[in-house]
Structures are given as structure tokens and as C-alpha cells.
Amino acid sequence: MTPDPDHYAPPERDDEEPAEEWVACERCDGRGYCLDRHDERRDCPVCGGDGELPADYDVPQRWEL
Image (cartoon, rainbow, N blue to C red; front, side):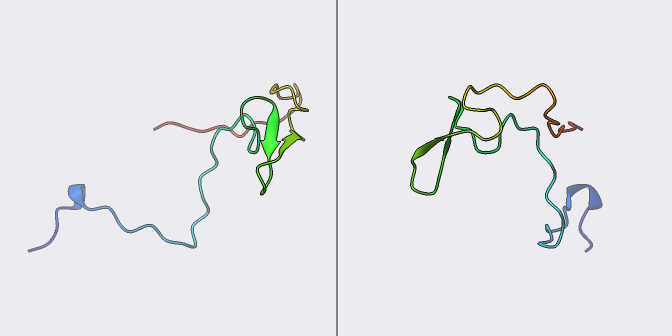
């Protein structure tokens, strides 16, 4: 018996590129600081430490289907 194609999802492949997600700042903890590997707080290089992105920063968009 063959599986119903409507209920079958192929396994994810490791070689596929990950989908870009909408992010305010990839490393910011939400309070204007980034956490490094040792959990020390550093000023965020993207938002400048204030949690706000620069106006000319190109934020990746996430499409919802």
C-alpha cells in the first residue's frame, strides 16, 4: 500500500540552505547587548547597544505561507 501523498512529508536534507528569518538583531539579547560565548554582555554591533536597528539596516524578511 502506498502512502497518501497528502500525509507524507519528505525528510529534510542537510544540504539545503536554511530559510532566512526575520530578525531584529541576530546577537542582541533584546536589551541592546550581545552575549558572547562566555555570557559577557557586549554592546551590540548592529544596534549600537540601544536595541534599535539603524534606518539603513537591511532586515531579512520572512514570508508566511
